[in-house]
Length: 468
Image (tube, rainbow, N blue to C red; front, side, top):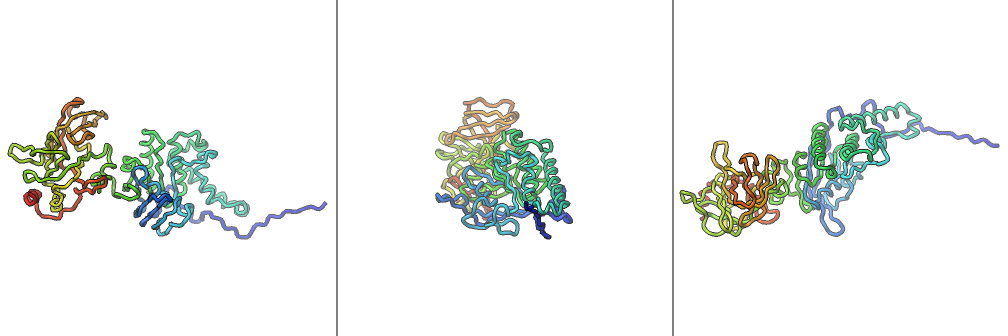
């Protein structure tokens, strides 16, 4: 009987994608390496039905920056994230990560890590297996290399174990390493998903509504963990959420989107206090800003907002003039004399007298008592309204008010300051902080007129005389 001999031929040179152990890759304890910025230049995505999900978006996310994309459902924020990840192909524009044009580069070659809303964990693997899978797939040498270089193979495994253990310690999931996803809570699964992204040490993190499946309390704690994590790792991050409070607390900048276009991209507080248009003003803030439709008029030599439907002469003060500290309610609407010190009351307002405008007042800019400046001057105006409902919130309370022209006005007031809240159905006098009122053009996305730069050296009183 003829015997058969089998030979295993090992080539002299075998290349594999393993790290160099003379210069090992950075670990989580090392100072963060410079991360890649993300650039979108006029990016467009049009679906076959003709809907422009992303319409000419241009955005730069700087190195180490945390940018939150926020907006209502269907605004294009998740599609934008998928375009950055390479999961969708753009119909126009370019996408760059660092110095590389990655517009046509496959997702696996973009050096990004993505955390999904549904966690996307491998159900048959333990936590350790989920954390290490991507590293093992990319870094572990093959069979022939392990036979020829067993020392190097062991070093690669040690490096992977070291990264996994450090990520587990960072996320406080070290005791969960031998469990499978079905044995974890929602918050624990989310931390495992984040850990799987961390161990890869990518150029950028992409988060697609990662907290939306968690309950309210767990969302708060996980949100704080993500904030601390970014402060420690300083990895370039793009974060998608529909929750404006989540975007405000996490982002270095928030990008507000609507109908596939960017409405504003600024730091959170700037976006909140200086919205570029009515859509941003109404979307950012909870409860949202109150809007009153009306016209701009000159009454008693003062620029005055007249609520839509208002009629009759303005109420006069004891001196016979309507002052900036008086807001009065008439049988068909209220009127407010705009403060003469407002820098946005300039020559551009001349052409708007007699035209329709929208007055914006945030709920927290109401009070049950007069508001005073640091110098002790009254900077508020009284408004007599009808109280229709109260929502107690502990230290604060949301009062639902009705004016002659609007029946869904919300005022968030200090519930402890007055000692006792007024009764539902009664007539209530609230005070409006005139330093915080803003004017907008009509329409859902009307521009904020209060942000227009001053172009005239004349005072508001002089302008009112010129307009009369």
